[in-house]
Amino acid sequence: MKKAGFEFRDHTADVQVRSWGSSLEEAFSQTAYSLMATITPNLKKITPKVERELTIEAEDKEALLFDFLSEFLYIFDVDELIFNQIYVRSIEKFNDKYKLRATLIGEKFDLNKHEIGIEVKAITYSFLNIEEKHESTIIDIVFDI
Image (tube, rainbow, N blue to C red; front, side, top):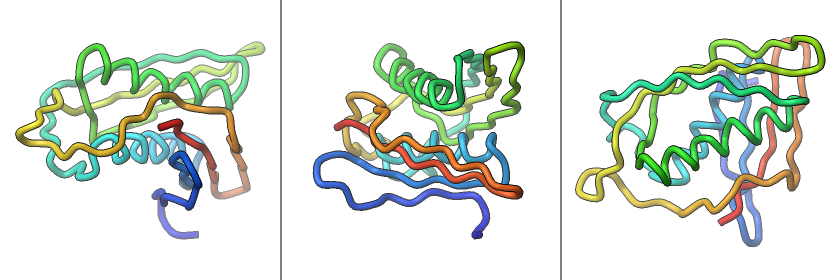
């Protein structure tokens, strides 16, 4: 498997993405990068000015990913922030829940600086799949546009 990354896949109406990494945390980070690249295609234009800490809890890994990515949409809609440094530091299971801790670094979206990509309305459970293997994790997901 190639090192961590993501690729856009053909989909008739929405944006379908496959992301991968050597760990669940790395694959979650790559999926978040794919969401940011959908919203603003050139992540290199984002200057690291603002840092956010995220903690998300959910009943399973799919719900955790859904809530994690939905938080990016919320932050973009409310605070107009975009990120190009996304570090999922840990995903841990405790009792019957999963907990994710992440650090996001980016800046406020600026029409004069950042490219306008595709407006993502929502994250979906459609085609959502998390496949964990011994030394890699692959995530498939669709963004509603």
